[in-house]
Length: 308
Image (cartoon, rainbow, N blue to C red):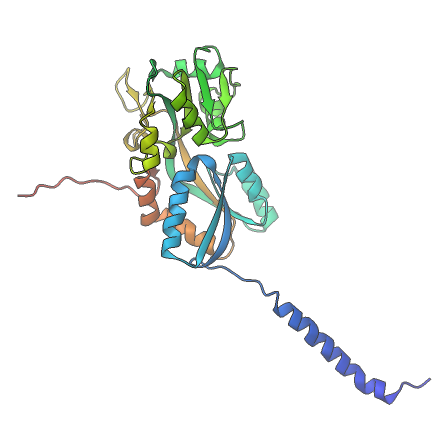
């Protein structure tokens, strides 16, 4: 059997056309890579840090209009679940990775994620403006949270998936469960709202929700709530009590202090790296300071001067 000469001549042209067809199709599917100053990334942020991180994103994007950082604010547990998804590049939470977790992510990603402390925050204990009790020892706080003392209604920012709840369970109750007098609100704003309306309530929120004197909304809240004073057991006189502030966080006088971490999974120098560098350097650290958190990377000192 003989193959037609025309078919032999046409065959190479058919292969060439097929190659060109697939090449054209693939050209329309080119992957767009971001850089430290442009592109779009998705991050997940612990809801208790929403006021300060939304401000950080606003400042960064004002400097780099081609950069778009899309943040979702949710519970700490949900942030860690998002970290396992390809779509989420970065999370900002109240704890870092254990060595075991770091190895698991490194095996999955083929490179280890970066993480470090950006600033220090406090879990603020807040009470109604007209509350009769405003001073608590750590022993009294333990009894209230455990339900041993049920004289007050305690309000937290959700169920046991939030960083505030985890902190209180681990650091105050040492692994014990909350008492029946502890109720969950739908986020930090709902905690503040509840305390503002209930004289017998004691609420717990991240300090960036209530300590910023430059925020009109927070100033309005301060007409209805105030800070509870908690027993100071470090760097203070015996029998002293403290409320959350940059000074009491810095010196360890306020007892409920926690770190604010970033965890970034980015192998190349992209928008996630650019935003992380900004948070670690002077401008980002100044925003933390202005939001009444304590910067972890830079020490800003006010020096007195004499003018003659």
